[in-house]
Length: 61
Image 1 (cartoon, one colour):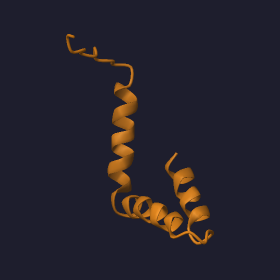
Image 2: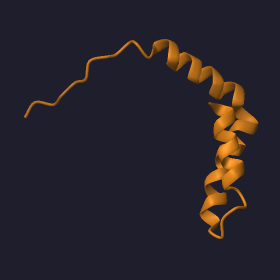
Image 3: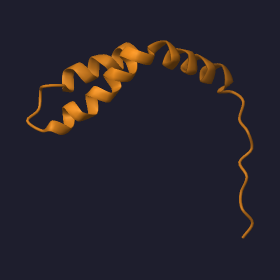
Image 4: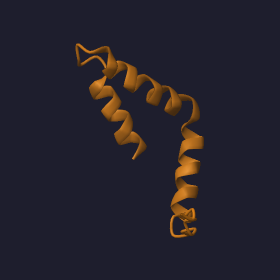
């Protein structure tokens, strides 16, 4: 998952005449460079709790 995302950022970065490609890739690379452990922990936590669906509250009309 994370490695694939980083591979995509490397394929986008520097391969377009549009600066938005680089602008989209750099924040992802930075987050993974500095907080990869935290991201992995949160993904694991979410995956463990994904089966727990809380009821959705709907406002009365």
